[in-house]
Length: 367
Image 1 (cartoon, rainbow, N blue to C red):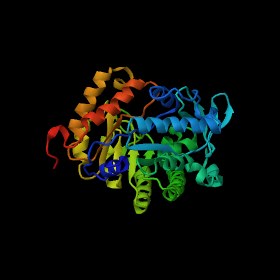
Image 2 (cartoon, helix red, strand yellow):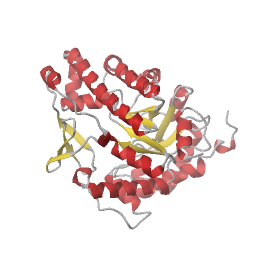
Image 3 (spheres, rainbow, N blue to C red):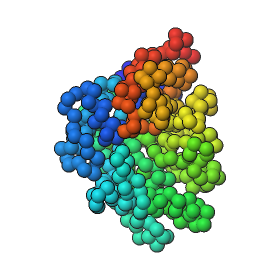
Image 4 (cartoon, rainbow, N blue to C red):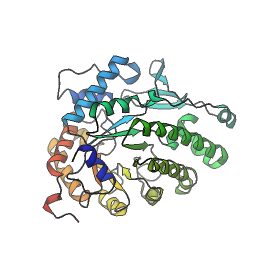
């Protein structure tokens, strides 16, 4: 099987020839630090808003090298929402959201263009064009279908609260201004759908919607509020993605058990990353069996940051033995390959998955 075939087979809850390997994201420091293990031609470390066109090409090529050296079955490409430099570590994206970029490279919204219902009424979302999809198009040209080209676009919850500036503003609106909350979620959904319409034309193979809706203890909003404000919007997006013949993956950290059935009812093809601090991948696999693929859950909080290569290998083997039988499983970290992950541990994770991930798992006959 090609990597793309392997990845899509698992997303379709099938059994490929071996467990697919993938990760939600490698950010700029991680790309540079891992690439050093494979080449001396590594770009200087810059964050995205500090890069010019040549820097962007160089970091993309370093990421592609990592994917090839580690034999990844899929690679995530971000929707390019833009990073206009304001001052210092402050940027503004295409949606008009003001964000602070930390040392790790991830932008954190702190001010948005929509503060009142009047702002929402006058807000004009930017037109989605091919420049939003340039990373995915670059990957498609490079890999020529050998591995799955996965487009990442923030989900309606993440877009909604970013447009409002802070998450708390959206959560308060769920209680004291439901119509404002619904209308903002509707706008966020329309932005997502405009991106996915372009993504289909660009030839992506799958989409993933990141946006944390849970913490370790419970969901961020009540299950009732999730079902009122987000579930219909997710369903709208998933239905459109499916109508185009593509699978949809939902990413959220935290304990999703209270709404896992809802995510399955929506029709997500996979749930990621089954965070080990608060979810059991064996139990989750049983709940999702026949309904969705599970993706994860190699710990990137402690294991990949401070564990040994031997501990990583042992955990990968044990996780595959639990989650892979019967297919419908993709191995990844429990979030992303972030800067605190030891490069040698990230490499060990993917290589261990290849050593231990051939079907039948453990020599057992697959059903």
